[in-house]
Image 1 (cartoon, rainbow, N blue to C red):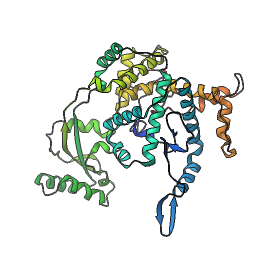
Image 2 (cartoon, rainbow, N blue to C red; image 1 turned 180 degrees about the vertical axis):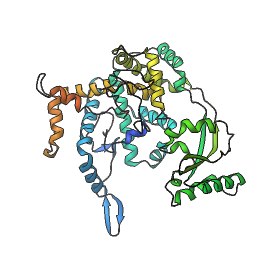
Image 3 (spheres, helix red, strand yellow; image 1 turned 90 degrees about the horizontal axis):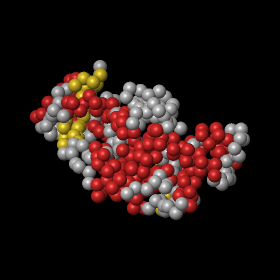
Length: 407
């Protein structure tokens, strides 16, 4: 089985994909919990009013019923699998502390500024994100259980892979879009003459009756189309000084853009002492990944596999980390873990309306040789909590390495 080079939005925002399913991965604390609360905090009363339309109130219960009707059959297995993960973690005398979750959230937020509004707002979305992170950390601990690492091994791994931990120099770019060249030329003139600021023009474009103009942003890296734009834009902005304004560029028949370099930050060398815990997790994940890569003789050496996979995935996710790459390669191991927990677990679905979900767990727990047992365990494996896409069995594309990272 082989890795493929992701296309389109398959990897857009690996870290933000943790919120892909609004109900996924919830538990009430380190040991799993009943799901009545998220992260040890109450989700909210069913009578909580979320919105008022005229004289009618839209409550949290209304939203919950709507979400359950839409995605209950997809979300329930994830909740159950999360519980199985934490029960298994507990039997091994392990847990995931709040401090570990907070540290992982801080790491992700530093790499991906789009998480800032979720963290600032708090509430249910932040609680769900934290519990998705808690599940991911729990999975990592289960996958690497029994793997030990000395200080020397961890430090050596860090030095060998330092380029994945160092923060490269960053350029913050603002973009103004317009469907007409005349409007784009006017904005460029206003910027250079300083009669209007980038912020003012972005606001004007977003309120204009122009779908192209609506893509304008003070920070282009936050745009959904940024991963596709970056390769052609970066060579231009690299030549501009801070505050520099590019000439108007035609990106499509009716799409004109102006680039503004609003800030630059120098590269920063990673401090091993501050990120040692993360490096240790990566070292153990790498030991698991080595076994995965070694199973396919078509793969290049492990370090080259990591390099090629990183390059292939980073084209779609500018905030990619080594942890994400290792999680991608370890997707098969994660899916196998879920399948094994389903087989060994004792799960009873009490609501008859979820008969389809019940069949999944009945198939997963069926005795060896029972028709459909293997299919149930494999086909219904819940996705790993890091939400990186499975490699499936598509042929390798371009420089992406072959690997058996697919489920």
